[in-house]
Image (cartoon, rainbow, N blue to C red; front, side, top):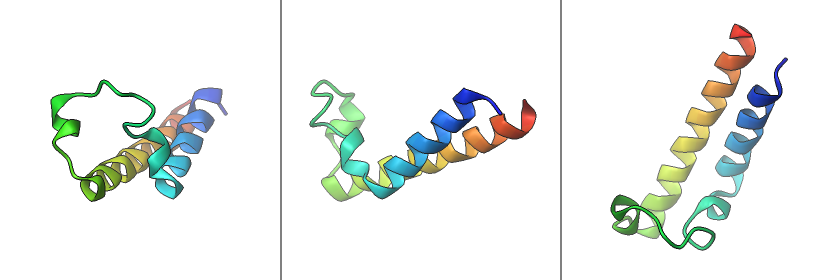
Length: 64
């Protein structure tokens, strides 16, 4: 069990439960595409990225 896979899974779960943590209030300078998103779309984007992190963590767990 690698530490990286656990970190990816935890970050993914946190972004699914509380997507506001990883949004613009923390990082003021974001890409143009994220600036154009509405708050609901931004939450959806963050949750999808959380699912991607969980999938990558699970894949890394089974490959290592």
